[in-house]
Amino acid sequence: MNDSTPSANPSNIWSTTNVGALLTLVIGSLWLGWWFFERSGYVFVKDARVAADMINISSRIPGRITHLDAREGQVVEATEQLARIDDDQIRLQIRSIEASLTTLNAEYQRQQQQLVMTQRLVESSLVSKQSQLTVTLTALEEAGVNLSQSAHDLIRANTLHDDKLISDDQWEQRSLAHHTNQQRHKRQAAEVETAHAEILMAQAAATELGVIEADLSITRTRQDKLAIDKQQLLKSLADHQITSPIRGVVDETFINSGEYVYPGQRIAMMHNPQAVWIKANIKETEIRHIQINNPVLISVDAWPDLEFHGRIERIGQAATSQFALLPSPNPSGNFTKVTQRLEVKISIDDPRDLLKPGMMVELQIRAG
Image 1: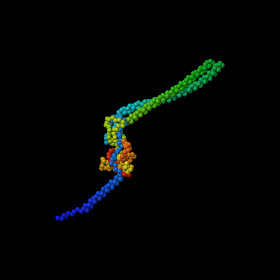
Image 2: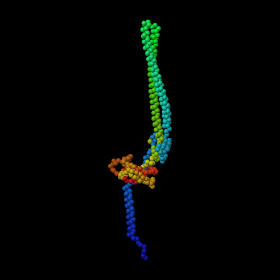
Image 3: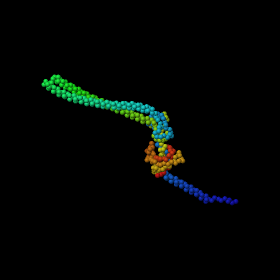
Image 4: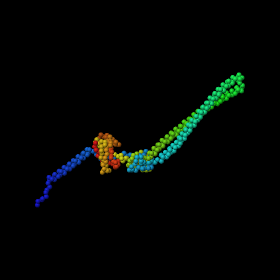
């Protein structure tokens, strides 16, 4: 019995295999060409990280923590209180200084009033004594005129008495009048000297004004010193309140309420979530392809379904090995060349603040 089933044509099978292999080769070549094209137009980085300015909050003074308001993950505003150190002793010192200032202010006002009163007394006394001196000088001048007149009359009476033209009684009257005028003139001269002495005494009393002014100066100096002491205590009181320097989020706290802290001891760590960037270390062989403002496509391990965009903001001016704490000298003369890396800062467009410091990211940087 003849088999009617047609046998497979070997030429057809060979043709189909060739077409498949050709298609595979074409597709592979296209993919490989595209891959090389992408690699030539971009710089890829696998080990970049999200970075931020991590701010350490510390105390400037020693003391015991009485309030701890900061909580990890808490968003705080600038100048918002994070912690408070016991300040009862400082407040007592400030109250003591304020009481001393009140006393000094009262003493200063009393001295001012005393100065004004003394000035008025001295001025009125000088005016009175000068007026009295004027009166006594006038009286002395009048007494001098009367003395001259009586002396002239006495000389004339002596001549007349010698010639027996006047009686003894008349001569004695004129002699007595002259003697009286002499005494009056002496008394007026003494009163003038007394008036001068009283003026000198009034002027000497004016030196008391200088004493009072010196007391006022001393009081003002004491007031200034207490005011400075108060300002220093107020500054120290402000240091007892530990506040946030920025608007940000508290990442970690290192103390508990009731603990004793020392100057410089860390209390909390925080950062500004709206000021994060990416820090990438680019090989020195690829740094020539990167320029400022080059666009960057960012893939984040924590958000694999999202793409973030950024731009080159800064390119480091020295290799990262220059900042190593332990340099690697080569005293033996054996040399192994190692590709160095330069740090690059990349700004991020992240309006939802999804990226956190320390996250791993992959970068695709457009070559310039």
